[in-house]
Image (cartoon, rainbow, N blue to C red; front, side, top):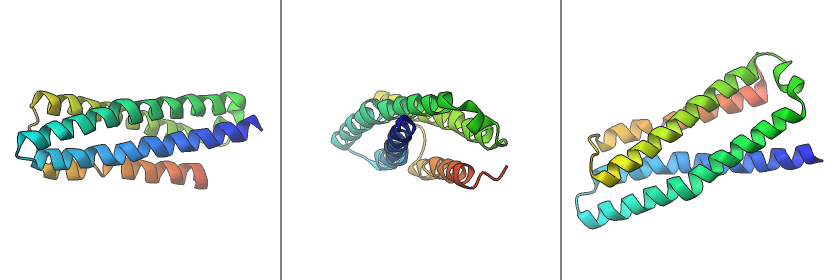
Length: 143
């Protein structure tokens, strides 16, 4: 029964984390397009709060529940092929992306953004591709 609760909380945490990973770069798009100081200040506030109070805790919760799930039965995850190794590699990349977003939040706050809204439109697609790969790895377990 504990396993199912942990799995449920892991999924909810991942959903919350990805909601932020999808929305924050979209805010970057709008922020990069903004021309007045009131809009820029509003975007800085929104970005900071999203990153610190939603994305950060959701990422930590997803990692804690994921590690806890694996610790209950490691052979079930690592004894069935390499899918879990590939998934964890993508999670590490996703953590790096998360921190890149945090660095960008700080750049915007300092008024040091040098990238266009077009860059952020492409940047916004990275977590979509990672999510697609992770879901396929977990559900299909191709190797």
